Image 1 (tube, rainbow, N blue to C red):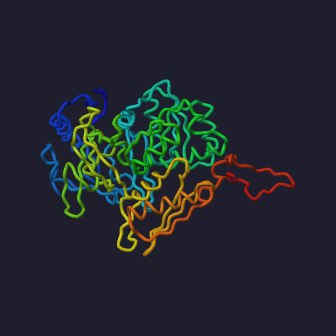
Image 2: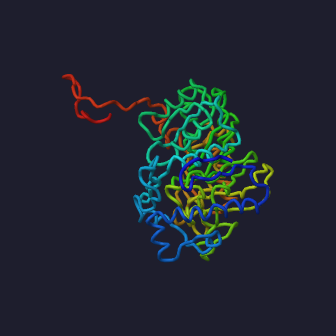
Image 3: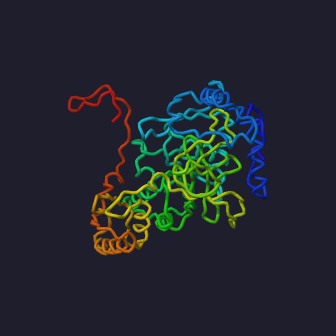
Length: 445
């Protein structure tokens, strides 16, 4: 166990894999921490008001009667309505990506960060001092880049802060870094891993052969089908593709075991499955994932509904971790009707990436219209027609919907310039020569 020496909720031993041998022992670890997290939650304005209205939970048995905490609750409490420690104790402040237009705030103490980094670092392939670890996710207000950097440094790796969606670090530069620095581990989303491979090819490199130091790619942020995961590994020469699942509000909540299954970190949080149809909560089954972190001082969350569609099981796994398994469908599990059939992204993804590797189909898009499913994808000239015919046949077998398949030349969906550009952000400039444009003076260019 890891002993944390200071802080109210932080004065405890955090469990590690192997500290329990049965489900009952794991449940005992959870129950023992609940009174502490109740006490900490009562220090935040949001939960203090809720407890004043509904009664304060004090013992583990009170947990079952607690209501859910929603994303809207976090939005309403923005920015510091969930804060349970003095602001002087905060180490970092974060916000969600705000795709809905209303961000949620999250904050962590140094001790919270120790828990976050430990959970992320539970990679079965290991993160070691010998590794050069490229972090290719945002370092902005979201937590992803900071999380990987903290875990990498915890394990002694050399961290390369590659950021993402940054003009300062275009794909071409990322390829150069990976190739010249002998990067052995990466952290990005699956689409980014596909983009980097395409950028490597555009630079005259072969992702399957010219990056011999690369041994694993850690991926998250997009639910993946088995076919897509397998294809990513093939593209990169058989490296391990290791999945991660979490959020800015919670940090890592699940990681992949050597058997290729995602396990919930149930020693560090309590997980439940919520059914919106019935309003009930259970330990297993299909529904929305509900999380109660057990070692969180700055921003305790009680029964926080992540609103991601999942399937949770408590079944033995050959890895021996004795933790529940989870399949994550995310918010892409929804579908659109085409005629009488509901078309889902996962169904299409599975078919796309079951096409032969030689077809080099990586980038695609689809539109579900009232009476026709339109699919477009990129493929090289010599295989484009065959790929279209085989995908059409797969859709006929699987979905039986009217469809229009269009195979596009390479570069149609992801322009070659996006893969090869070396343009960098320039510093502000004030003085220009007589033949220079000064339209962008004072601006980053």
